[in-house]
Amino acid sequence: MRMHADQLTVSLETARNLIHDQFPQWRGLAIRSVASEGTVNAIFRVGDHLVARFPLQPSEVDATRRWLRAEAEAAGELAGRTRFPTPEPVALGEPGLDYPLPWSVQTWVPGVVATADDPGGSTAFAHDLAEFVMDVRAIDTRGRTFRGGGRGGEVRSHEAWVQTCLRNSEGLLDVDELRRLWTDMRDLPRGEAPDVMTHGDLIPGNILVSGGRLAGVLDVGGLGPADPALDLVGAWHLLDDGPRRELRAVLGCDDGEWLRGRAWAFVQAIGAVWYYHASNPAMSRMGRRTLARVVEDAGRDRHL
Image (cartoon, rainbow, N blue to C red; front, side, top):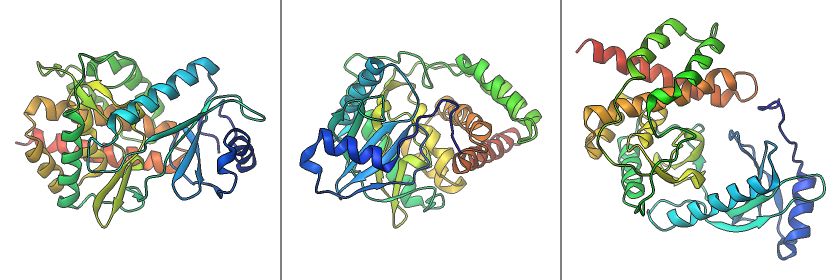
């Protein structure tokens, strides 16, 4: 089932033809479709060490090319800045037969996604995740600040989106409870902490695990300056209560930052449940689990 109304179709044959035509040096490599819970790209593995990614939603060619170049720049900026493997840019493909947009090739990062190998109860994984967040925060912003257009600025700027999600979640979630929770969250002050570099999308589908430890991090194109609390979404997307508390202790989060992190997780999760309910059940389930953790946390706070 399509995740987006105007979603493009990318067959294995189409991917193979584009890769062979534009990068003949890889004609001897096996090309395989990769089952993914991702919502942005169709994924094809090229040999053992490369992966081709084809955007699924239509856009202007020049706009897509600019985004892919920005994504490659972000991936290059992160490469080598943490001990955890991340994809590195390799090549940029162009539109061709049966596919209308530019596309990209990155290095393949081995591991199992956290939705398939849940690390939620692992304190060691929580320490790994905290280390990754600190590594990203240590990257120099070079004077850059959050530019808007997504999560990472003011929580209250997502009021219209959350209201849309609440309306579309009737019959799927306890909307009255979530509405009360959002009322408490939406006016959280941004605080005085300056923007820091963030990954921006630490959800289970972007986290690779091996033996209960962090093995790699995917989808790094959103790397950029934002509210320091933004990468705390992983605390609720990925961790059970005990390891979540350990993550907070390692990062040294104050109350304001921690509450904003919970709010960012809420904003992301509430959209995933209804939007992907039929088309991407794994994403919808992720949203439900994250919201359950957020609600449990908030309820505990009220009784302290």
